Length: 143
Image 1 (tube, one colour):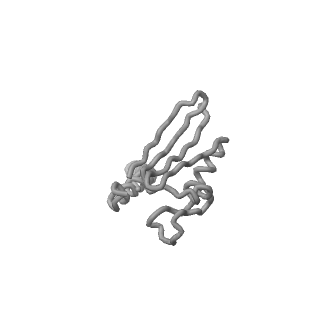
Image 2 (cartoon, rainbow, N blue to C red):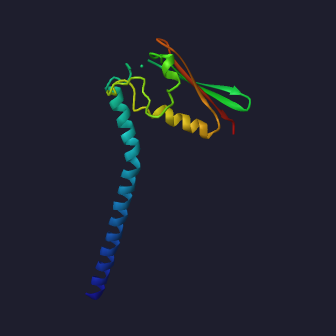
């Protein structure tokens, strides 16, 4: 009877340990899958909300400049008036000054991009034509 009790106790401890391992494993897996699943979900919502029919196409181009790479991001959107270009990289600056965010964002994206590019000791430039779109360009040193 004592041996049976000891064996049963060991089996119970082993099962408890396996259960803890299972909980930890499932928790880790669900945590690791959560971020990509939420990202996919966000893209799906964008597509379902008409993301394919929105501001047209975006083209990313790379040009080899010996010691640097020139990166250009172009769109065929509405373009930006000249009067806005000098403020375009200012924090919270928005071409659309209405409170609605139906067109545009919070005014932080281009400011963040500028800081990242400047952290690499480079500059970002923009050229734009109303009705034709805009092109943003910057260089990065090759590794």
